[in-house]
Image (cartoon, rainbow, N blue to C red):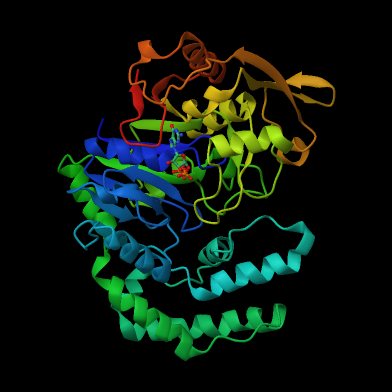
Length: 424
Ligand code: GDP
């Protein structure tokens, strides 16, 4: 295997960062290919506990090169702060182990302001944005109204381009939202301050990655969020504004002609979801609170309590199909240990009929979960490291899920620590 994508099968927060951190051992380069700092990957290893937002999860492995590809929303300020935060815990980030694509677009402070202004305008009809500016950023990228990271290397060009964009953006800020305009001093001050810190990291990563492929280097593509948040295939409009699916990895990474050899989909042993939108399996009340606490289900970026429920086999099967997963990792199986019997959503009921097809977004809200129950295992499994040492009921749960979703679990995670993993 020369390259591999690690992707989320569900709504995000499946534990992708944990899997990337584990598997980087076998790779030379880790590339983030979409999204921005709007979600968090939690990684716990011998160097501490980290919540990464923009930095690829390979940053902890000495010798691994980490790349922010052209598909990523690069917020210079947040990236610089994150670099300093991990540096405080002894993780060195240098232009040797972090490369920023010169073709990545910059997420500017006005994207964050616009996110907040639009959520305020929507009032009761919010999409649940993390207000990190992601949707306004990608809208501007598709309008070709963004600054590329590489422009920081051409100051005169940058200033002229920034002035044109400022004039255009102020029309929206003041005219549409009645907000104060941004001045050229503010914009250039921000670009210069953070640009100075980050310029050394910017390079033609497409060329460097092509050369790495030719030299036989192994590349890991790291996704943010999951299938059901994909702009084109997710629960529109409650999706993110980019494509977390593996098919986008070569494009967003800077290797458009490369074939992804292996796609490892990360599935959580139960369902969680942050933000708004239909969530068929959702639990409420004490049942939800118990699961939320058992799994520490609070957002890494926002601290928001995550919505929780049993595993959703209809959505998960669809998620696996969208990703074209070749193998799966099941995470957080240990969290279910407190349950006497484990609920699974085996089908949906839609308009009175049973269905196994994931519905069109507009009717998803009407779908009801059809639950089945499997026997619980009633003991702590977080110290188990071999498949045959798992209680039989836990193995049955894993086998039941993989059979239902049509793809094997190659890894079963029973704790957040790097070594809390069972290889099958
Ligand atoms: P990501 O964005 O997909 O990387 O996921 P998050 O980091 O947002 O959420 C996953 C959370 O679950 C993190 O806090 C991990 O440390 C934790 N985690 C990952 N795998 C396991 C596991 O198998 N068991 C337990 N108990 N926690 C896990």
